Image 1: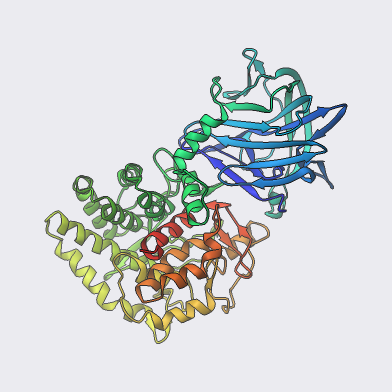
Image 2: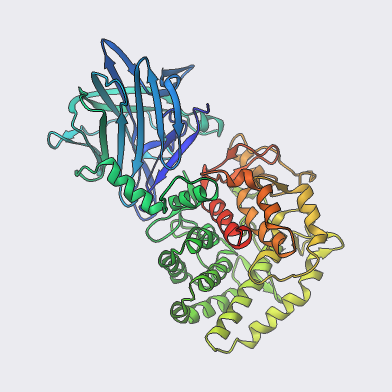
Length: 600
């Protein structure tokens, strides 16, 4: 039994609830209620834990588990008899003749968490519940500090606050004021990642009372109105599109709703916000395959409206949002996919002039990139999806002409030509000429015998997966010779959990993603396996005759996840690394299944 298996719930505000099945928080990001407090999706841990002590016939026991220096206390994990982490956490404990089932669910539209305890046989005599509050950014840890006191609003509602931040606990139990500090919680995941890993949590008081019913529900909410568990569950299942027990790809589809906000897409949990590249790549799988056209249109409009001088900002939440060469190009990809799925000609007509201006402005270049003839040339490092850096040091600079950027550039031009035809407009002759030159000279630029360059001018012969986009995009710039290069991908890059970012035979290959930030970022795009790359691989392979059944069979281990992580190690890639759930990992598995693998 993996007591550190993580679970996740989220809502359209960008807030979430997450911990492990033992309810031992192993990350600074874990918490029962972690609220998105502004439009930038800055998340604060409000309620870290709510642990319980049961009493029956003079015997007390706790379901809780925590990591402390050199010890685990209490050891509620030893009482776990069964658990499920999807579609929401359900954990069954057994102490003597008392069985307790603990369930947690989060309202899909608001910060409203409901915890339900069920006692199928013997009902304990009493329960005491201890909230441990944090009121801190999800990425920071604090030692003992001052807090505002809790305030009982009425017999059922108790408010907890720190400055302007607050939440309510709604319960039939009596609230007893206190004021104790629990010291030196340890978070082993943060310790392994080289970050601060100890903190103190405050217990303002506790709730207590006798138990007479087989069920007890506790509401943790931004409002003071209670909602019963089954009502929230119905909202939650409706958001996920669940009507029955599902598995495999259907679980991935259902949990893909975790990334959706009211107007954007969260790139990954627990620490990412809204990133344009991730959102635009994810639109087909997360939204279009599930016919969420209204949200897709809203996301596209949002990024198009914020574009400036040919650049779609890499994020709407950060200040360095112009440091990108591909966000604009992925917008054209996502826009094309949206139109193909929805046939929304009205939106296309509304957006056409902006799209045309965007592609013209892109072609003019800027301080980061420029056109050299018909090819996009990067003047500075860190402008592609392989953008890891420590300070000013880029781990994969890719200066020159990256193969994926230029495949995306051809796809964007082809998309505009297609849109022009759809709207019976003339496609500009200068763009037509650039597109023709790209197609005529692309192979000569990037292919050297049996080698496909990752970048040219200067030439980089490193075997990476980026050339797959020349074959997999809606308008592929190359339609032949795929079999000459797929064998290299299969031998040195391919795993059942995704594709390596660098050949395992390369002297710069980093096999393990672990250690401090520098060590991890060094491996991030130099061997680490990325599940989202399964999407372009499947699409390209299917176009060139690889059977759908063989592809699905090979990637079945990945398709059996309910939460698809950001990355895996470059060797023995079975344990997820990075974010526990990544938007484009889910999205590309869904898109590739629906478009390329699904039995007809």
